[in-house]
Length: 336
Image (cartoon, rainbow, N blue to C red; front, side, top):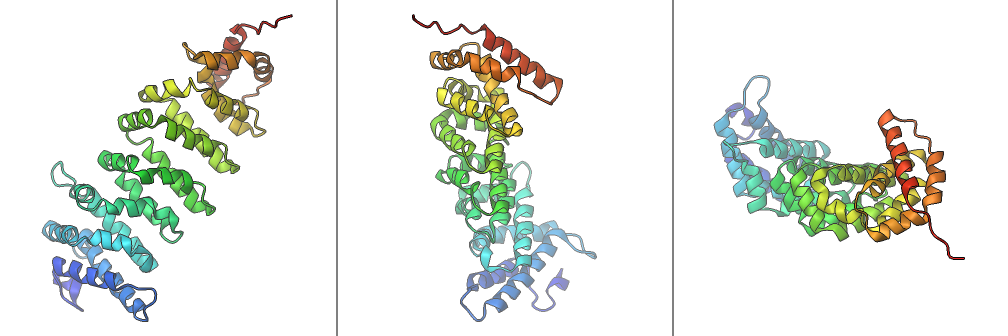
């Protein structure tokens, strides 16, 4: 594939060496930065052709293998991520292609890039997690990270990192696109691998519940609704039983859903109902939860008598069931 390097012929290892050299020279404050950006762009395009071919040539497995080995041995992925903001827009897109192509590359049952990241350069994941802190590269980092966490081992690493909890702040960033993208990543982290997530939620009940409840109480409608929907999705998973047993015995959670049921926005009311119904339906309720339900029995009956659910018949049946169960609760005996 010598045609690739007419201006400066190089084999794949030499190409990665040259790319690294230019990446490490990038500097916003340098008059030569544009020249280094252009060189990085040129080398990244050559890398892309090796990985994917072009109109005239198919990618060659041996060259891809050489390229990948050199990228791992020189920490090229790390260097690219550290300096991602300094690259031009098109080069950033080429970095995404490079990263994701290597990530999906398998040799037998092994994923060399996954092993490299976890065993040699986990700092890459730290950079990706902190991506939303930069409006320039936040969306790119989110895209790459979501592909990374499709692998359970990486998802586990991120969940057990102290940086994971930053996502509960990132989803409240004032830049809508960044906040939305961060919530997509948070959602994927908590839903991609069911068994892994069930163990995480059970071990981190207090931190997670506190964090998600703060989002549910946000003044931002989008944040509030997305958070309730995420919680509702987790509640519906039987794998999360250990977490749910704690969640539905906690009166703070019940009171929060009661507040949402009285929200003026119908969508939030309905989302809250899909969580509230489990407090009522739980066969063995904690005494504290039962006390709250009994204390508010009349209010619940009045509310659900007029709770208009313009939805599927299943949701209407659930509303009627909840109302029926509430009516079965004992009345408060008032002393004379």
